[in-house]
Amino acid sequence: IQIFRLALIDRLALIEEAQACCGSAIATTLHGTLDTLADARTFPGDKLIMLAQALAASYPVIRPRLARPDQDALIARIEGLTAREADPRLHSALATVLKAARQGN
Image 1 (spheres, rainbow, N blue to C red):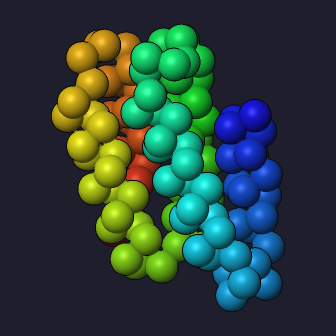
Image 2: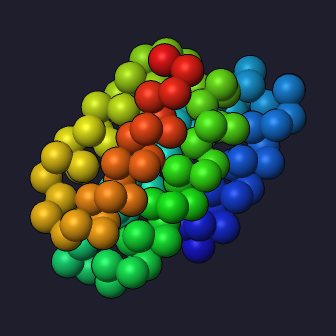
């Protein structure tokens, strides 16, 4: 469901009118995605890797719709998740998300 939600937000971010009304909703949804990525005890590693890959793919389209403070907060959370992740495959996937989040900043 999280991957599907990212795909929808990706499409929403392409709609010019969405920026004025939906920027904070998009940021909130992305924080929810990061909450899921932080919960390795509940979700299987392969699913988290798929979610991280989907986030990395969608983030470049979504980023322009985020306010600078939201971008900075999301990057800080992704940095923390990446630094704390012990699983090498998930760590790599999160590093890819971080790279996507930092592009354009």
